Each structure stands twice: as C-alpha cells, then as structure tokens.
Length: 411
Image 1 (tube, rainbow, N blue to C red):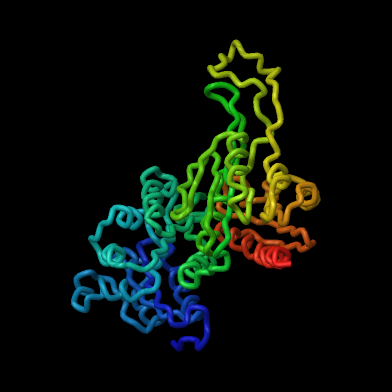
Image 2: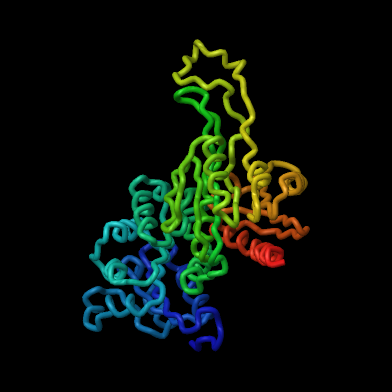
C-alpha cells in the first residue's frame, strides 16, 4: 500500500495497540485513515484481540509484521523499539482490563509492556459493555491515567454487543484522529494568552444539607481549559462542584456558591486576557439559609424566600478593561434570539448558544451541538460532536477576535 505524498501525518510514526474488544474491527479503518493522512503505522495486538480480527488483516494493510507475542517480540526487541520510535501510541479499542493494566503499571503482555516502555504521548480509546465504564474501579483507573497525562477518550452511548443500551461504544473515529492531531500537530496559537475559564454549577445552600443547583457537569468548561492549555495558553479554571479531574498544567480554584465564583473571577480578571464563562451559575439563592438542617415537619416550604444571585457575566463585562469575553446561552426554546439578546445586553465578543433539550447534547452529555454568535454578526453552526472537539472549534472562532483586539490595542 503506497503512502500518500502529502498529508498532516507525513513523517509521523504511530503505534496502534488493539485489545480484545468486539470493537477491534474498527481499528482496521482507523489504521487506513491514519495511513491516508501520511502516517507510518505499526500494530500491536493482545492475544484476545486476535480472536476478533486476524493479525494478517493489519499486516496486509500496514505492510509490516504485527506484534502479538511478548516473547517472540523480545527476539527483535520490538517491545522496546516500537514504542521508543513512535511519535504517539494509540490504544483503540482499550478494554477495561487494559485500562487496569495501564493504570497499575502492569507489564504481563506485549501491549502493557510497550506502554511502560513508551515515552511518547499515549491516547486510550476505551470500549466495554453494559455498566462497566461507570464502575468505580474503572473510573479510578481513568482518573489515575488522566492525572498522569494520558489522553483517555470518553466512550459513547448506544447499542452494545450484549444488546443493552449504554455508555461503552468506542468513540467515533474523528474524535480519535482529533486527539492524535492534538499530540502530533499541537497548535500554539494561544501562546501568550491568559485564559480565565469558569465551569460547572454552583450550589446555593438552603440549610446545612440542602441546596439549589442545576444539572451542569462542568464538562464543557473543563474541555475548554484543556484545549486552551494544549494550544499554549496559561489557564486558570474556576470550578463549581464537579467530579472531573483537573487537566494537568491547569491551575484550578474550587468554589461552591455564586458569590464565591464572583469573587474568584473578579479577583483574577485583570490577570486575564480572555474570559470564558462556561459555568452554569444558579440564578437564585435562599434569602435566609439556615446553618442547621430544617426539619421536614418544621419548615414552611411553601414560603421559601428566594433572592437572585449576582449576574457574574454582566459584572465581568462592566469591570473588564481589555479582556475578550465569551458567554454561554443554554436555552430550551428560542435559542438564537435569547442568545443574541444576551450577546448585546452583556457586551460580549462571542456567545455559545445551545439547546439543552437536544438529543445527545444536554447537561452531562459528552457531546455538544452549538451555534457561535459573534459581536461582528458572524454565525457558525456546529453539529453534534465531542465536547473536546467543540472546545477547539470555540477557540478557533476566538482567533480573529484576538487579532482584531491586538490591532485596536496597537492603534
């Protein structure tokens, strides 16, 4: 198979690891896609993976022997040379068992030994059946890998091999390719920028145990923080209560209430050059929260007095000097008209409008669809895609805004 003379991955060596999932057949097309982009491919398979796809398939396509056995590989030192020569190591699909080995540093087969020997970036695309992804042990392994700097992609929800519907399908090929691009072709177009990003919900106490909040998971804000870091920005993340790991290299301030978030953001506003207000701040708080638990039989729940929380985005807009300001509009109806009004009323440079009732794009989802509205009248419609990919598209839309702001400052 001839390699293309041009492509984004020309001259790049990619080691593709395939573990024993029914999704192993998808690795075949992934290999072909990466080859068409110019990459030089090598493949390593676990013994279980060979039960789903014959090594000969990968050998024919890659025109190289496929490494499958640790002891056979030792004769040519492939367990060392292949990961050492690779520019990126991609394991797709990765089973729950493979995740555990990677997280715990085990090296009892060829693939796990290669992962220990590799010094290049590691990208892992999990695939597993019903409920396994949400198991506490699996999530602990994922968090441990991410804390170590490994890119662990989220599986997607849909029909599984068992016939169940759940989260465990191998993520779409474009998401894997985008992750590879981020490693092999890192953009540094935000170098010199200082980005202040808010994420997650706020929790406004009613009493010692109850609070007012919303369904925000913080995933979009965390994805933006990670994408901005990868593109060279210095990032400060102000996060409401969320269970997500903080991306390595990103500073984070944890807050709970709207008041705490306001203080953290306004305190650091002068430091920043770009502010992305992705947090879903609770609009109301209890007017007189109790420091003790209100007993169910004692409380007058029909008369819970509420007061509006501060409009943080408007406060930032009024206090900013040179900062570029990005807002979000999570709506359930008349999405674009509400977003345009918010864009104008709060004097924003860009607003990200999304319909939180859309299938697959609501709160807590790993995917999002949005329309980006600019101060200059630009309108960019973005289809459903992984939030990490969406984060990059939002940052792409900010680039011309940054250029205009720099010109205005120069004049």
